[in-house]
Amino acid sequence: MDHTTSEEGPAIRVRGLRKDYGGTTAVDGIDLDIPRGETFALLGPNGAGKSTTIEILEGYRLRTAGEVRVLGEDPARGGLDWKARLGIVLQSATEPGQYTVREQLAHFARLYPDPRDVDEVIAAVGLEATARTRISKLSGGQRRRVDVALGIIGRPELLFLDEPTTGFDPEARREFWRLIRSLKDEGTTILLTTHYLDEAAQLGDRAGVILGGRLVDVAPIDELGGAGARVPLVRWRDPDGTPRELRAERPAELVASIARSLDGEPEGLEVIRPSLEDIYLDLVGAAAADARDEEGALA
Ligand SMILES: Nc1ncnc2c1ncn2[C@@H]1O[C@H](COP(=O)(O)OP(=O)(O)OP(=O)(O)O)[C@@H](O)[C@H]1O
Image (spheres, rainbow, N blue to C red):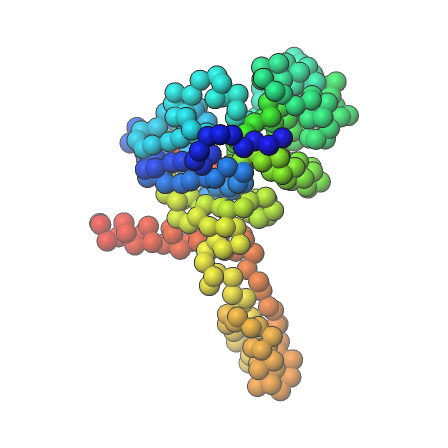
């Protein structure tokens, strides 16, 4: 289904967003635009402010300050028509009720104007074998699939996924990725938080790294951390055992010159291409060091 609507502007527009919980500032001045049709991965360590941000966008939490538009509406005032255009998978799992998987989905499907077919959704999340099982009898990972199914049953224009695959086994995670790609192909805009960097790399068009309530980087997935972050690292040991490492744009040339200078095979040779996880950890480490320097300067 084509989700293009006559509305102008991005799916999500955030300016100067702030959220204080008593004396704690959880979100500290975020600016972000997410165009329609994009899959955006919000990354950051525990307590960084991801869920708070996403819950404000969903209309679940009120902001302290800033401007927010989600599908053209202020989430603090969004009505039922607006809510029906969103799909939400919260971080905390569904309360297991009396109902079977199929009953629960059929019930929720009736709340939306143009729901997906219940059996199609059950198949998409791989719950055919447990469709007639009470949710309370499912495993943690199976319940999480029910959460995802409930998030997409209403054919949302914008889907929020807060750590959707926590508790999934590797095969289920791959099935879930296929499902998300098919939603993406239909034009669904997706905002995802995850601690699995491979998931962000697989699904995200762009990612943002949030730390201490601030966005410290926003970029296309394969440009996160800047060009320098992707330069391969060559490691080896000198004949006396001293560990050596150098970054090299052209690692083959460097390895050849090391081999020539040693007149043989370098000990412990490794050429490492930084993964998204390495780049993310470097970014978070560098931003935490900057924050400590700032605090030190103010003290
Ligand atoms: N209801 C609340 N009352 C008070 N403080 C809160 C509340 N919810 C979150 N916080 C605080 O706000 C900060 C951001 O929390 P948030 O849940 O948004 O982080 P997160 O990035 O989603 O973390 P995680 O990866 O662990 O889910 C944390 O310091 C947290 O302790």
